[in-house]
Length: 361
Image 1 (tube, helix red, strand yellow):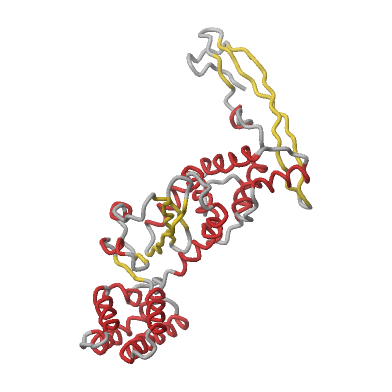
Image 2: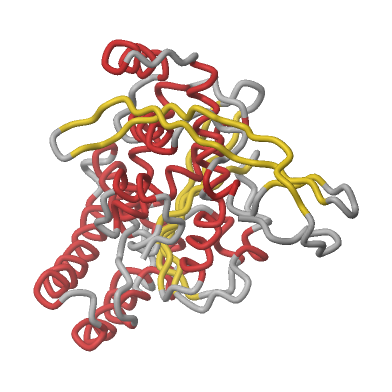
């Protein structure tokens, strides 16, 4: 109960008006879920001395004044759309058929923006944790919007996942973005990453794919075959060690001598094949970035972890291609970041939503 005026501190106040609000919600029980309607009463007060009109201190805690729908209803519809991929039209039908709740598609779509704004602080916490990590995996992919074709960038430290949108693939922003990062960045061979000063590991899976493609196109190129075999034997032995001991440098750094020998025997000698010559140039250029993982703990030799994070977004992209606005996409990426972070940390995302908690621990 209010005892003093927040403006002048006078204790002579009286109840000015009473408002009631019906909040439509869902209630999750042990054996099911049901429609739930709650009636709230909130009061406004007036100060006798200064005439100030104000709400009681607990009014906003008891009732979000502008909201007619409960948090569990909003959380459920957000979960169905984000995780299950159910369209808002189908969610609308399900609410009508199962709970006799009639909502427009526009209202359901607004729920996404509301929840995204609610979790923006959580979203900011995720990127702060990632940038403090010892290793970051990064990748990017295109997204056609209504009025432009942009790029969604994805970062993960294998515990947190962060998605964000850029209108172009230009990497000039990366220097400022990774300023202060002291770990190892795992990426593909996109040239924008080359200007970063942090330690880097290039995805060797991308390199293997390129080699396999060229071997398929040039089956009778003996030089290329020998080159690919030398590289595959080296990598095969390294991967066997990883499978046995994990990504531990005390077990992997012994391969530094093997890597040096590979460069002496396969990279330094002259060759006749133009394809092999191009690979030699590539290996020389990325000498310190192809095998950086053998000198660090916990650094993977590929960026499969971030490609896994892209898969959910890629499925969503197929369903909304050319239909999204930039604002709608950014709301979705906030929620997707939180969902995937929960997945990586093995936290039940729906329980997290229902709790209303803003901290992922």
